[in-house]
Length: 468
RNA sequence: GCUCCCUUCGUCUAGAGGCCUAGGACGGAGCCCUCUCAAGGCUUAAACACCGGUUCGAAUCCGGUAGGGAGCGCCA
Image (cartoon, rainbow, N blue to C red; front, side, top):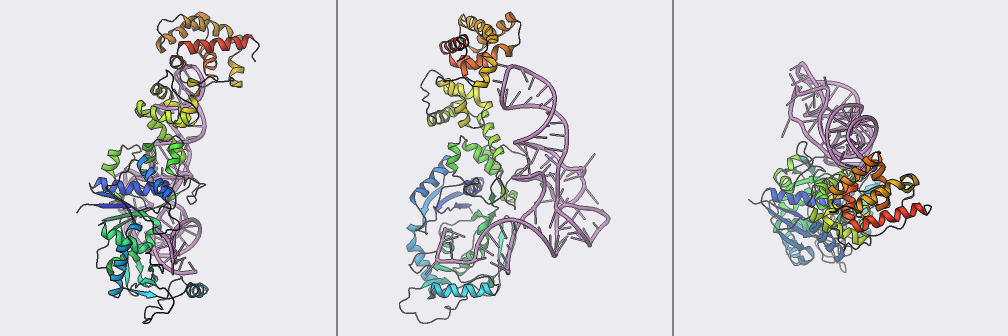
């Protein structure tokens, strides 16, 4: 039997970290077993579903490079099929029309709550034989009233529910549209889903779905309920706390491989291993290693992983992404400086590509003012001589390269009888405008002879004219 | 309220009755390296929610307590 999993988001918002993790586990499980991964858009709630959200889900999945083998399927395009199955259930006596008004339902509910009971439909229309005129009925599933339904969850183990805890849920609304618990069953059945991997919040729905499968004479799929993901503060994930679109991570300068690697370790582990290639994730992924308890997102760890992938990633590929970020902060990197070289120079001091872009600004455009603290310390009358000396020696270099520049710096240091820092730091502030940059020889090489000398001259002139 | 689920360092986690003086990772602290910032190396503090039971022996099994979460829609 080939394994078939599905990711079935409802398009009522963007794809966030929790959804992405669910999708990842479904995708990994399918890949691991050489099965199929199906994407299904659960858009039966026409009020809240939007095409923008559908697109956002596609974008997020594409960015994270999780491709579906089948789909995307849209439930709104399968209404005929749901009607057919509802009819089947009705004919077999597994479902019935319910004419209760919302007011009536509300009253039942209030009474139950007053009696400290769990609110549920009391099944009063089960035995109704005549329609109520002028009322468009809903269709309810006739849930077994006795016995138990057991969910053999691959993560939780055996979970037993009393059938009398489950009420007769509505499967078709009065406007003839199907509801979630019904469409899921029909789809999982039709799409031959073998493993339903989804969020913990669906565990309570599972016995109802199993009962519908049973009524249809079908075998339910296997289930695996994943623990929730919490915000950094341990509170429920909300828009204020980490529940941002995965595409926001791109904008913030994260690499998809970092996000994926971060996500895979949320609720799953393979011994002590932290860094996984895609191939390793696929090879090692196993539901038995999925945790039961909820986990909080840790932004620092994501940052660490992101930097790891920046440091170890292909500079040429990263260069393209850096270009995108530079453009976003208004820099058009069309000059002679190769982005891949900037990536190499900045990788170990950038946790995100956004940081890298910002820290690399001075490579691509002139700065207006010196960082006051850095200039205060390094562009002074005391450093003037060393700056001048360095400038003269630099100008005499034959081949403008980091090793040659490095030799010049060392010669200058020897000639002046000072430490390297005394020479390098003023140069750094002169050419970058601030106190932070990649190693000075590399920085100068990247900047080029013309730009480096010009900025050195500018700094020397600035000091001579009284530092203003 | 009712039903169901969960509980190891601050966080992610290892741990399948003796391998546990509870391991790794992020973050923290300290040291080293160093032209800045980093990166890197080394060291270090830090947890089995609680109470009972089973057992020669429990983080691991059982029961209870506490705390947290989810569900209880003509939402998904």
